[in-house]
Image (cartoon, rainbow, N blue to C red; front, side, top):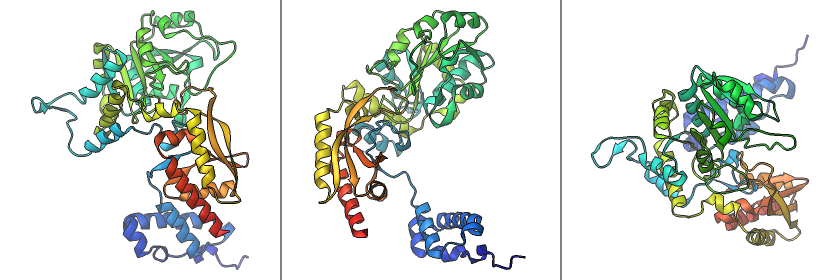
Length: 440
């Protein structure tokens, strides 16, 4: 018989963790809800590890409360960092979004004062940029594909190459999206080789054909897949998911305009990748086809909100006026400018630090231009200790996300300097080093 006291009895009451200062900052309801979670988590491990102190639990509570959609300096070198919200918005997009936070003419005909179509100005801009006959905006890229399949193929078969049954960010897979749309998946070909004759045999009974850009991986070697142009010659409507929303030439990344010119009936893509705008799903096609999508029951569930529409409008105005978005500025940043930024950060380090400016390989990210070596420059820090410096930068103000690789902290200039954040990162680096020096 074990007579030792149950360590869970030593856990403090909620009132012992909650302070007036915490309630004043975060609100009593949220503080107490988080405190209950912290105590419940401690109770689960108390039998093995013992009951933590009140001070330790208060630290956990403070950490749990200090979670928000906070601004972050991205020093990882990944331009479209999904965990950081992908594309940073341009100044015009930010101003437009801020103006739309009050009342805004979202579904109002400003000429008559009566109800109108939702955000026709955004659609007209998309049409002008791509040459599409009609366009439609929803809340993300997966929703765009879901809507297209629902409207064109619900209750029928959709034919797709096995080599294009991709998994996109967050674990979403093409077969799962198709099942949700109400269409039935019909795979043809093999993982590495699918021929036009495979589609021809299946197209007779199909409601639609689907072509998917393998945006987050690259197949090499003994491979073949029918082109959009070849598939468009078959009878069923062709949906082409080009993924990144590229409106300018970048390696072999498919553009919306190219897919439309090749004969796709519906082209869909994301707005927060190479397009450089807010999270959105964009659809392009003929007036009749886009109107069919607009009337689908899913449309109400996946439509974009007013702030997204305004930010997208601002982004599209940048493109129409020939002004580079932040994404494009980062992609096209000259190496000399990146090197200069890193050398300024190097000079900001305290005496005795061990660091150097190095050549690194960056990435566009966000399922765009996979496999491309993207040369960049970074400050590589061996001392102060990389992991401690990483934590100090992440906890600072402003927060900085770096990466630790092979015993060095890397601060990549490609995702900092072109955004005008080089001085802010330098200041954050000075503070973090000073904090570490003071705690040594």
